[in-house]
Amino acid sequence: MSDTRHPEEWQGIQEQMQQWRRDLHRLPELGLYVPETSLYVQSVLGELGVPFHTLLDGNAVVGLIEGAGPGKCIALRADMDGLPVRKETGLPFASTNGNMHACGHDGHMAMLLGAAAWLVTHRESFTGSIKLLFQPAEESPGGAKPMIEAGCLENPHVDAVFGLHAGAISTELPEETVGFRSGPLMAAVDKLQIVVQGKGGHAAYPQTTVDPITLAAELVLALQTLVSREKSPFDPLVLSITCINGGRGMNVIPDSVELLGTVRTMNPETRVWLARRIREVSEQLAASRGAAVEIKHDFIYPALFNDKSLTALAMAAARKVLGEQRVYELTEPVMGGEDFAFLAEAVPGVYAFQYSMASTDGEIYPHHTSRFDIDEASFSEGARLHVQVALDFLGAVDA
Ligand code: NI
Image (tube, rainbow, N blue to C red; front, side):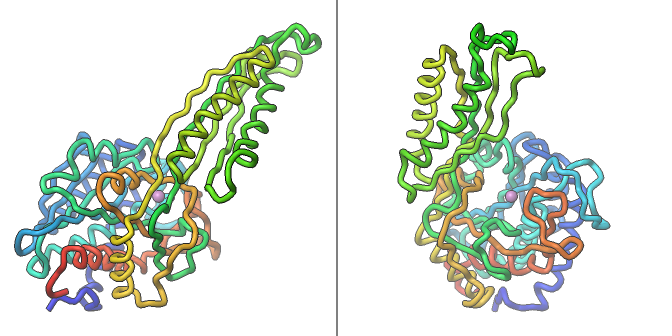
């Protein structure tokens, strides 16, 4: 009888996961180039006896655990990349390469390896197969899409995909819970660059110039009115101008000013509409001042939508692992982005948030900061959740 709740069986795996996380925490790598991380994951899979192959020049790893007979296939995904944040947690296993696992992806890898450790010794308890997706570049520029293009959802064809984010991605999520939401969960991410092209000159004679600074200031405020005056407050939409570059001296009006920012939406139509309106407003406002704009609007990640029936299945699985009280239904999506969205666009998917923050010097610090830390004690529950979702999806007879 295979029971994922056997505490003694998970105790050993918990200790291993802690060690894997600490080893991975020491070597955070960035973006699509994560060679040491990938080799580490490959070596653990090798020790566990899980067959795997690599994609993206060795920077992505796909493991496959086949059950007792033919059946469906579910993919479990962990992201692998760190961030260019200089670490200040003072942990004994802190990284020394100037980067940091400041979003908990080291924990994601450890938990998926832990799930693999359990699954590979219980192949008799399920039919079908479980694919393990170790993906680089979640933070930027995105690894899920190139992995899909490289065939990670085929051979065997993946029927569903599950992912779990550690830490505290949603501020709504109570401590000690795992949060789910059917439908939209995370926002589409766009990158916006606007170059305002004016005509520079002496600051004492502005009438001889086309001042891009005053125009850029007008533009920052005008773009906010697209959010506040042209769209329903019930259609989630965030536009943030985060960077203004222009000018070098107090008595010189520059030729141009560059604005950078990001746009977050849930509704794909709103996304397209906003890109069009940003262009129209910017071009018309610039033209009215005798200036011009160059706009680059990049659609980076789509919005992440959780499949309804898969969400129900995953929530039921979570109740088995955590108990009724610790499974939380999120009332709101979050405006952060996540390239798991590409996987959930290609096949039915469900992504969940596990609350697992640890304090540094008595305080909890948010994701992407130099004192962020996750609670290693949560790993066995996270790994068991991966396992239970997979078993329930495959219709395991004996779990
Ligand atoms: Ni993250």
